[in-house]
Image (cartoon, rainbow, N blue to C red; front, top):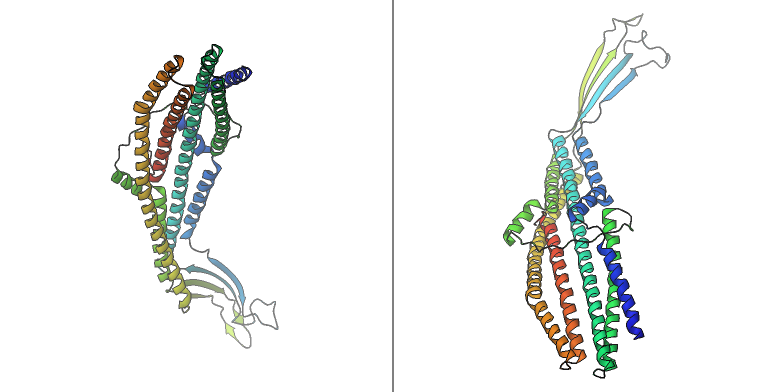
Length: 426
């Protein structure tokens, strides 16, 4: 009897705790996802990286700054401070020069930088998908834990009723004391599961708060019940949607484009770059015994270009760009193959989970409830032993937990499928 009262007190406390949890405000998935997308620092880092490379892309096609030059030309050593008037070759010179790459190089550099920035843009979009998937997974895991706690709380109350029945029968000499101990042991096991589930919920709350970038002790409310959504797209349509919408595919396509542009630029490196220059010389008139020069001003126009003799370096550049393109193409093919497998495997698992939900809800659980009700009646009239009654209750308990686990797993699989395809499917 003492054990029974201890368990009863524990049950009352657990019910009170559960009632307090149910009083918490309900959480809504769209709001949680929006908060995560607004606050998550990893996502902000991805956006900053994209903006950094977008800014670099705007610099790629710019010309080098022109060079302005001032010089004093042909000064006499014996008269270093004489700036003219004693020698007709002495002049003050001002000049400007501009480096010009070979035709087409600037456009290719701009194209390469644009492709690279675009790839980082899609990396940020892919991070959004992953973050959304993780929030959904934690959300539905919390729902499954809360449902398991509800099932345990209900079963603790029922086990209390069983203890009462067993004690009543024992008190009139129709039962055995061992039945009371069995019921108490099963109740203690459920209390142990309840403690584990509460710890699991705290861990899930901490994970959700981490994804939303808010204090770890922020309370998380209850998750409303839901119905399993029906997919409107076939396997082939999901694959087509993934090829069209998945950000990671678009990122790799951009990298393939970058590699092909890099290869064209490597071929262009075999052509010279040019440097155009203009110089204007200010001269002064010279009239002495050695020369009589009116000192007309002069100018110089010139062009210089490099000689692309170092072909080994240019061949290495071409090989580098070719390897980069091949790597991106193979990664793209691998991703497409992985997406196709993920879609097939996830659809199969979702179908299994959906069938299990229908089976538990429409067949197993109602039958288990009827079996348990029959066992309770039989136990009261001594036609069924207590062990059979207890087994029926435990079986129903496990079936109810499996029902909620299958529902949550279906939604987790749907979140993974959406992340693989790249769009919302509900």
